[in-house]
Length: 184
Image (cartoon, rainbow, N blue to C red; front, top):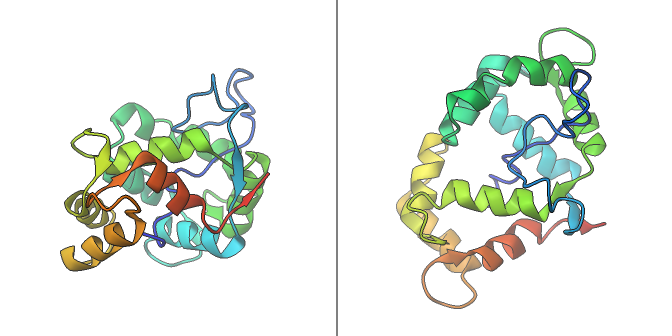
């Protein structure tokens, strides 16, 4: 699962809405300032960027962004916000988000909050039972266009499953997702 981190990338303050701190986030803003914040490495952010950049042209198009949102199970209201996201994210106004813009926006967004990771957990918890199975990991990887066998997914779950119940619970997910991040 280390290759699919930070599916939720964050944005700085909106230029068109003073009530919106981040244009697209899974977080509950009520608690976002009191929970720990983590800073991913540039390598990890490159992996996330590359997931969005399906055609590998070095930039994320609106269609690529929408495809990821749909694969993650986001409804059409989230998908319809993509043009607004690009108004803020696309600083050079070329119609795309390149890696430099991606990193600048992530930095401006203040890092990855625990609530963001919790909401990413909910994306993987397809049956909403509070735990992630190897089958759910496998299904999400398929939706995201990743090639991964069920056996590989079982190994991933086993590696993160510290209590030995065969599933990844919320705490195990948070530990797994923040293992290589700096807390600030």
